[in-house]
Length: 175
Image (cartoon, rainbow, N blue to C red):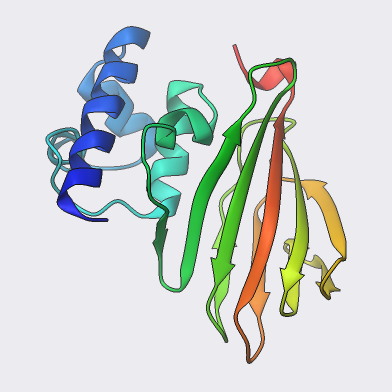
């Protein structure tokens, strides 16, 4: 992320934390990161991983999309780029993302909030995806839906993959 994006993310993260009445120490401990790292992130410094951003959203009890919504660019690391397309406002809350994954990339994603469902539709390339131990090989036009409240994986072969992801946060998962 560039500096402007980090500044926007940091200010937004701090506002969400304060609006929820959560201290810096509480959020850092719950997300499993050092308080100093969280403080740096809120100041627009550091380089958070996708997993760190997911854990922060989970601890703040907000959808990932709500945390990254003010960003006009994608977020990513290690060959995986994700961009929020649309953040739903209904019940259940549904967010849509564009994702691009580099060739020969394996990304294991941490479990999301309880009862969260994820659907991936491949646009181009070949992607193996699903819950760890229960994946499916997807070709363009094919989709898979799975419980995202369990660890899951995305794995590419020798080509770039582009896909659409929808994440459904069931009512019980968002307070």
